[in-house]
Length: 74
Image (cartoon, rainbow, N blue to C red; front, side, top):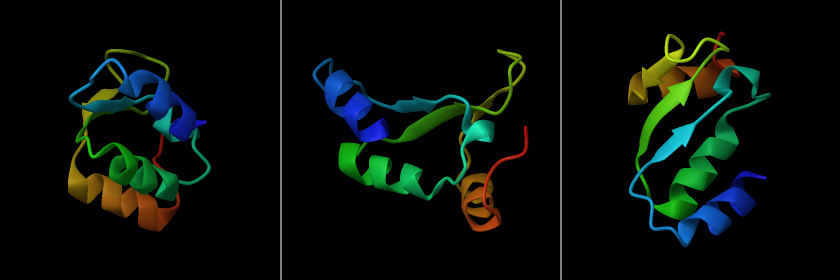
């Protein structure tokens, strides 16, 4: 699903990615594949239902910990 979305939106020329519903993802390892595929930086992600309160800047150390721990807490 992520690969398909990246291909469809790629024609619009995005300069960064925003990932929503990251707290609902079973695993975040696939996110690394999408970052490699698109060669775009990850700017923001959401980790809950309350936007903008659950919108956060993507931080490498938090994402690395989430990949190793199996997900982000909501």
